[in-house]
Image (cartoon, rainbow, N blue to C red; front, side, top):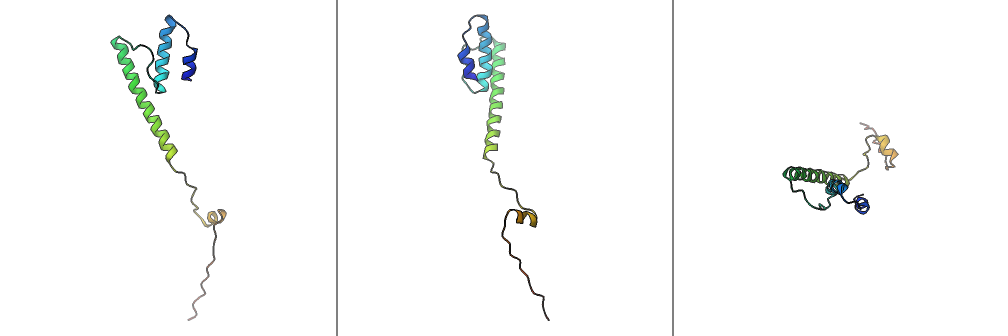
Length: 102
């Protein structure tokens, strides 16, 4: 998606600033480098810094949760009853002990 935005950008002038803002927002979410010039005014720098910190945290949380979900092994369900054992095809032997004759 970011590449599509990059290819379609051919506008100059006033829309150029809007385009740079869009590239900053989408690019930082996708861990891309910051394109173009950085803001020179202090409030914009503070806003950009806060945004970069937030996207760093969001990206790290997303990637770590994704890694955790993909590395957890999945086991088949355990049989809880005798019927469950028979349904999964477990072999069984019926042992019978004769009564004591004393």
